[in-house]
Image (cartoon, rainbow, N blue to C red; front, top):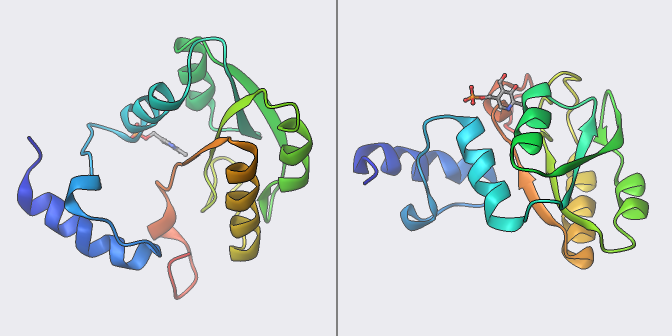
Length: 148
Ligand SMILES: Cc1ncc(COP(=O)(O)O)c(C=O)c1O
């Protein structure tokens, strides 16, 4: 059972995330890695392909390997992150089950995906039936006045 005071704080913080959450939507985990594992298990089966940034955070690649998933590296810009065009081409044949990425201050690139590109990515993955998993571990660390 999650700690209610913690969940309340997370709900309050989610007001700044552009999509306020209900307490029932929150699952508290022991780490970001555990959360990513749960997300991946929810939307993939062993043998599936998962699109990731290139370069990607190395533990993500280990996690994919542990779960029996294939990593498909998508070219990524050091300033604006994963190439939506390249993902579009890669996902055309319906063989990309999920896309796992760090749009805000990615590791190791530090890239920050601009808002319009995020919208494009969300629209594309919805159209192609690709589950989108956002690792937003660093969203609060961005330098802009406003949280991305
Ligand atoms: C992008 C990214 N995701 C996840 C993690 C791992 O987070 P945790 O230690 O909470 O599992 C890190 C740690 O460096 C990271 O850089």
